[in-house]
Image (cartoon, rainbow, N blue to C red; front, side, top):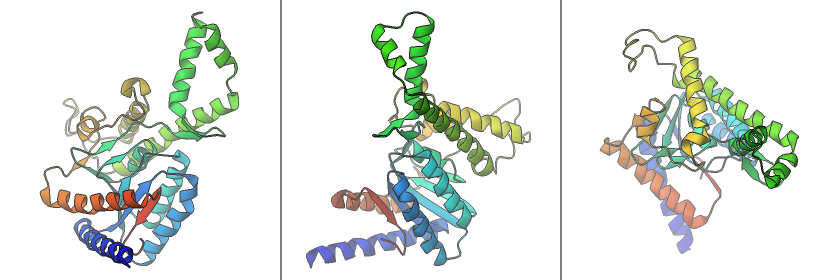
Length: 290
């Protein structure tokens, strides 16, 4: 009985806080916690359909907390969301890493504060036993090939190179190319859609931004986010300042908006604490789904 009372109290509190966020964003609001795995695809589809059947909002705001996952799953999740909604916002209270970062790049707006993080993009590919980071793997192969070319490769390294599965290498390369292709498409189509004139380039200031310029900027962002030599770590947490200065991405910063920051943290922190106590690997929340 006590557990039921506790769960009901949590549900009621989260529902009230979610309602306040929906009024603020004037949109449907959902919460996604966990890895982006193929097994989540149908769950996510049904979750979004149920929410959309309940309302005629044209904007969806996704609160996201994720370590990443499969880029193919992210592509399908974007297809699902964009079928039902014209506009998409992401709120990153804590972190959205790897494939989570790719997901965020499909949004019209990304909301973060000074403590939020995105991460380098390195699509995870299943090698038959486990998911491995494709770009990190390709980087190591590139190093071995360079050593072989320079005749500095050791016998042990040569044996490793000789034992590589060419079919798997092809899959890693395909995953890398898919990631870059999706980022370029989504950034130009959604994130850059309201980018009309140059604001930071002194030589082009106030001049109209062309589609090729948007495509070039998107490709630069995709390549830099996937450059392991630059970030040094797949788990590197990229904060709002670096996203703005290095990647030149427009981020909606709510650090000094005390009202919005309180709304976001009161909802997110209680949700994360509840998930931590229940040990759910995947958790979705909306006004009609708990």
